[in-house]
View 1 (cartoon, rainbow, N blue to C red):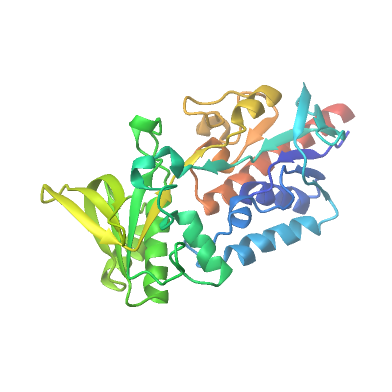
View 2 (cartoon, rainbow, N blue to C red; view 1 turned 90 degrees about the vertical axis):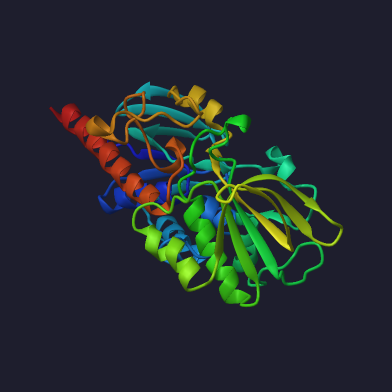
Amino acid sequence: MNRPVLIVGGGPSGLSAAHALAMAGQRVVLVDKSERLGGAPILSGYAKLVPSGEWARDAIGGMVQRVESNKLIEVRKNATVKAFAGGPGDFRATLSDGTQVEAGATILCTGFTHFDSVNKPEWGFGTYPDVVTTTQVEQMFSSGKGVRCPSDGREPERVAILLCVGSRDRQIGREWCSKICCTVSSNLAMEIREALPKCSVYIYYMDIRTFGLYEGLYYWESQEKHKVKYIKARIAEVTSDGKRLIVKGEDTLVKRPISIPFDMVVHAIGMDPNVDNMTLSAVFDVKLEKHGHIQKASTYSNMSATSRPGVFVAGAATGPETIDDSIAQGQSAAMAALMLVRSAVLEAAE
């Protein structure tokens, strides 16, 4: 009767949940649609993580290793859940590879999708090769090659980072703040300045939201120590004069137009709902909130619960989230699932 817990998604929250359950002696089946575990930090080639400063390949890679080496955790890669039935203590899942899994509880750790800057064409992505995303800059650092202009490989002398690309933008249907972009952008700006001391870095923002304890570590330190310049502005478009990119808009503090040349423009892309959420909602019979993220129950009753009893959720599947909080939520969901499974075993024994 002690059936395993089914975890869907092998990113930070899924890895955390799997490890927590295994440490409590609970069997786990971890399913991931990719050929590698680790989620966005590994698959998208993140560099140094906020706020630890550890390389993603080491920090998240270590989480992957301990999961893959644990005998209580069965990992199924390149697989998705195609059918799901039953109730708490007695779920039955059919995987895309034909495997049948009987589970006592399920945790959805299905994460998010990076905003596609093609949906913000006026800001130059897809038109000019030197307009890139924060994820692409992360990949430059993690590859060890350093920051270079994609068009010709030269080191940029001037870099602009545009915040809220795919966040807080009603015109393109993204009303939410993606929570971590300001901090990640400040961190990347400091990394660029450290790697290229002669490079000037400008961050264009509507508001700065380096929330909690990140204010001093990132917002102020990037200005006072690394000389990153912050400009409160509304950006209209990114064009080119044939030699450099031109960022056009309005400086909203002094109320005047701006037109400034740069070698590279970086989009601080937001966190969209997982593109698979409609399918996940149908397969697992869980509700989505109005923006398309998986809806979670009241925090005050059970912060890990979904609309379906016995199916829990953690991490960025419910909306924009930090890696550290996703890991904590994975552990919380693991505890909720463990209590359900153990209760089912006790009831069967009575």
